[in-house]
Image (cartoon, rainbow, N blue to C red; front, side, top):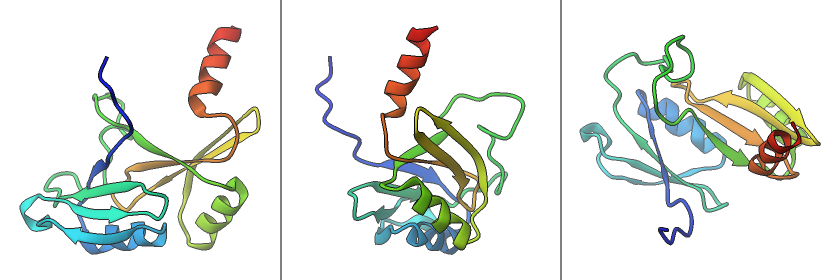
Length: 144
């Protein structure tokens, strides 16, 4: 077994630097370094929670489309980033106040989640307090 301690960062391909940086800044991330975005290197964005995302680009094909989630053919790849939030109702109010569309929602055993999209339609799942999604899925599978 590999002795993993945690995720270090997640890379997200984007097409419009300014629009994406503004979106993630709205969520509380801070741009701390531009490693050379125009050459395909990351924009490093950190959140006070410790989450580190790297915005990579510029995308040069099919901007504004999510080939992993929005097409009938299902390609392999990372489909979404799930982020735990302290208060599901506050997260939903924040999203609504800022005009971010909720593209899906789920509630199971008191854990509420909503799904939103970044400017390139990358999916973010905002998971409210309660049991982890892994625990909820395992419980559901083992109960059936």
